[in-house]
Length: 300
Image (cartoon, rainbow, N blue to C red; front, side, top):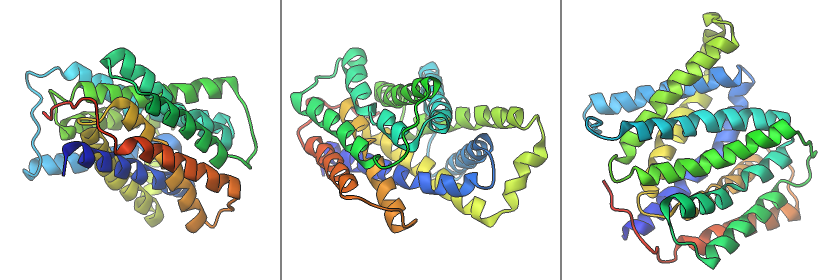
């Protein structure tokens, strides 16, 4: 199988995994606050990464490499992205936040062109615009609540998600997908733990409170092991061989999976307009998924 095809499948699988994360986050957030959840999630994910290193299953070699770029990668994703996303969603309606996060493909297309000089095809532009329409359609039916600060934060989340793909692809020649993911989780676990302590006024009891709940751990295990370790490894691998524009477009496939999860698992309502949105997103994603890549980035 060609590396570009394998990378495409890895990217699609990674963002599909993200689609279920909203469901598990909702379960966990009924028992704790966002920063406590993020702290436990990334501490657990970082522990798993270290176990992989200690058992010899994965190698970690950062010495003599441009680690500063990885620190920037970790700052952009998960730190800035999750802060902007959580508070942006809290300040706006679900439908509006879905539409705002739907601009990630456009941001990725622009940043990939400006920062990495990646070629941009008419098909990519059309598919990126169509995917935004698809996200808007899947988000209809709910209350539309606007907030200027919420809009700015959601725009920040969209840009940081696109920058994540740009920086990850730009550092692929120096670092493996595992090394990039390891540093991301190291920074995320540290920052979110500090923020969780600040949020709860350094009350360790507040951080320990949800740890006795079985449902909390069920959600955390999915969010940390599957939605963090597995998904980010897949996505960091995929950007080695596919363009930022293409990788960013896959992010809207998360919307398709999250809507379908809500329908089949949570028994959410569903309308023909939402079905049309899902079809449009799916067609736009697959429209650029199996076309020939103009250039490949060699694997480190």
